[in-house]
Length: 68
Image: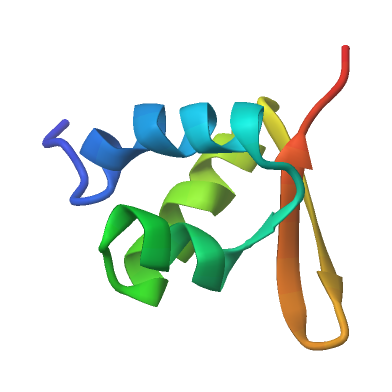
């Protein structure tokens, strides 16, 4: 299966979430210099893998590291 455009930023997102949590999709996009939709797709993928949690709050998606 070919790599998705956002695969290369997933490690950077996880590092960011370890330092700063919670974050919004917009914050991730800005800090990693990617567009919002790329950040959002990557965050949904990481959430699907069970590594982070996300919630829509006041029209914004907020993300944090999932505690085991």
